[in-house]
Length: 456
Image (cartoon, rainbow, N blue to C red; front, side):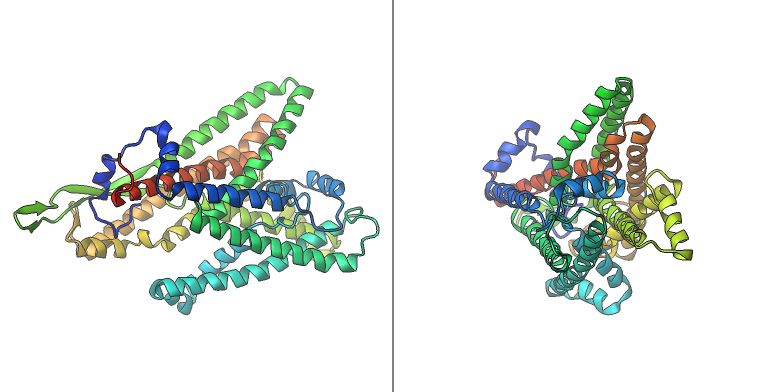
């Protein structure tokens, strides 16, 4: 959605701002400040990928790869970390702890009045304070996740190299993984502030991209060993192409709410009085609901595997077996939970975005002397927008969930198990992040036009 604090005739101006599709990148590089942002993003990503190659001291890389290959959940999580988890790199946790802390903080903000006051009425200082609390929480979560990951890995024989003392390895690995996670958070914030796109999403995007060659080579070997799988591979690629098309349509679709501008006279000239519109995206949350859902569904599975290593008995053992039976990506329970979480986080995200608050939009329109066509200003406008945003969010979230389920079930239907990780949420996240980044570049180019630095 466009910034409601901006001039309400902004969408009309957008119609006059048309860049050739194949020349947008060239314009972006030449635009004032864009070239520096792009170079900074590439440089930060190069540092991140270099850090991913640094393993925690004392681990046996070959034994770790075998462990990840035998555990589908770890293999799927590893894809999002760009191979950092399989090699127990210092960046193995990535920004997962920070995302988890952000989810917890946003939930607490909705139930704790003090935090809600900081977010809504505290202004920029309040938001910075909440961000700082989130960082502190991410340290604690990173320590907890580091403990679980290290214990889970080291409980298997052969993970540590000969001569490595576990008493020294454990605290060193905990410190390295926690520091790597905090470094990922710092790097993602720098990309968001000084680079292009959302830093957290960009890091996840790069992790998925870096895993593609491995998945392609595995699929090639599978098809060569069994030529009859060529048909299944062709069907799967067709489903992936359809998935990409649907994601592009979902991300780019929006609903126009037409507004009537008030006329104002300055001297002999009359300004305003024309019709404009505010575009409400069908899926304003983008891929963030998928990322949140993946984090919440994947880490409990890792904890269950960790607890199973302790050989529990009785009721706990039965409960863990039941969880492992039903909470697998192909089970109906997992699919239902995944779909429900996507809906929940889509609505939850919308309630947190300042530019999607109906009362605020209605108030801004009233202050500028504008109104939605056919709707009275003030309270009725807020009620209308609230109902509209709720309907759009439900439609967009449902479509996102359905697309995710289609992609998730496609690998099992076609028998191409080597692309199971890519077929769940990775493909959708990859396409969604790419679209969001391109849209942010377009917004910045449009801003440059209004500043007079870019001439169409």
